[in-house]
Length: 119
Image (cartoon, rainbow, N blue to C red; front, side):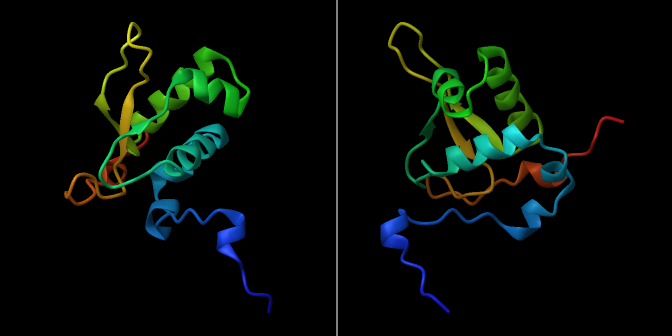
């Protein structure tokens, strides 16, 4: 079996199997799953993730309204939480934390575990 060379590929993104198997994750749209992976690429436990609508529209090739809906879906299903609101005048995107990863010496909050469909 060939040995993977993570240095060449830029590393890996790991997501908990329990999260992937969860009802909340199974109900995410495909683009939301992709956005979650893109956000996780920027995750560090000591700083929030600065990721905004403009960056999302470029990366996912979608409209601003679709990008906004994707963030709302991820928030609504408990995978991300706002750390700091955007500042249009300072040209700063919202900053986020992933609820399934540690942040600022705190354990993950896992809001996605308690999500249930509206129906």
